Image (spheres, helix red, strand yellow):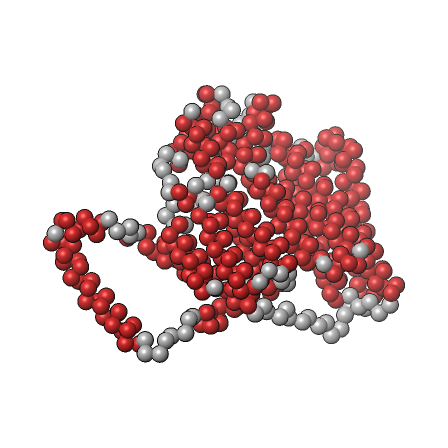
Length: 434
């Protein structure tokens, strides 16, 4: 186990710094997973969430879009923490808290080894100046030294940081797997009485219902209704409300969670009333999210698809799926008990699907299609996309293609080490070469 922790840190120092991320990332992740597995065993929780975490790290070797890879690696860390600590709120910090016990991973020092360690340290101090003098005095000796595969001096700080970060992360995961944290118990001394929670939830449901009725009128009224009642173009109307509606969905999650924790339910009728009110709120919030998505699609029709708009779409879809899951949990008691692991696993699968979708490639495809339909194209924005977008940009006519792919041609001109191999960059190089 200790050897695997050190091997993961050493592999990170050797493979990751100084070059673009690539196949080296999942290789390091495999070593981390092996170290954790040796400490945690093969439980269903560890296998399921650990496999999802490893799957997400693999996208560093597939996608070139840095923002997608960053999302995947952050999610992989959280899933790895859940794999060793369980699906609790404390899982995200459990490995960091366990680092206080890192000394327990150190191997025992053999008796009588102190003189050996002191001798090795003194030997290094003595040999170093002599070696430097011999290096400068004899060209043949210096050539022999140059044959030793040492890292370039400028890369040492980055390699040291990579070694320390992965060492700490791997050690924390191993320690959390050996002795998981106990989730804190939350006790509510005085819950809200039925009148105190039923009235606010009912009023909020009425407000949501009125808003949804207006959205249905807009849906069937179309452009003329918006122009007549709001004095806005469809694009202005779409841009005006999307983020507010997304915030409404986020606040509704807070309300639902707070009601579940603080609402006192002394009788069965109260429990049923709470589930009905929260179910109505969740159902109406799904309609609000559909309205928000429709606004964003209208805005994209006018101005094109960007990374921020695509990410906002994905968040809105995820929120809608989560509210649908809450609705189902209100009806199925077994699902309520498994809500946390199902939510985490579902989110991980959704992120896998998002990464497989090839976001930068999809953005380029949508914008090229829009150009064919309308003649409008934001080339300056398309030039900022990663190598994932190269195949779509290559479909543009020569007068536009050269300018659109110029940043990719420059960025991919230099060779990369084998540890930086990336499928999208490899395909883009082949495309640019042709």
